[in-house]
Length: 84
Image (cartoon, rainbow, N blue to C red; front, side):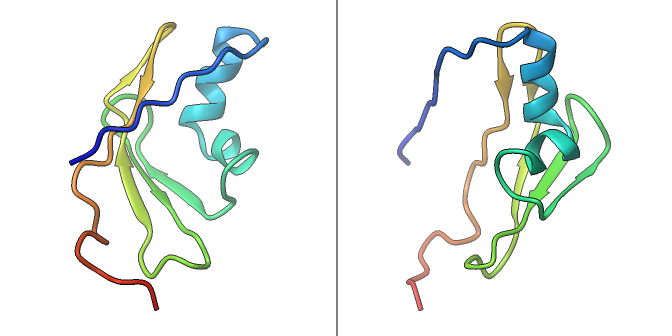
């Protein structure tokens, strides 16, 4: 499976970035407003809905600190499917 790593420099305080990547309000502010979490912080499962996706994406926060926020997807529910 391919691995995608996204890295960028952003001029904002670290705490602001971590919040933007790990909270409902943060994710809704830049990605999708159809977002929910079961829990908070490392171990929380984030569910992201998109109008064109038949099922929500589920991502588990595996790391959230001053240097890295990580939520690898692993195997997609859409693997092996074809577009409509």
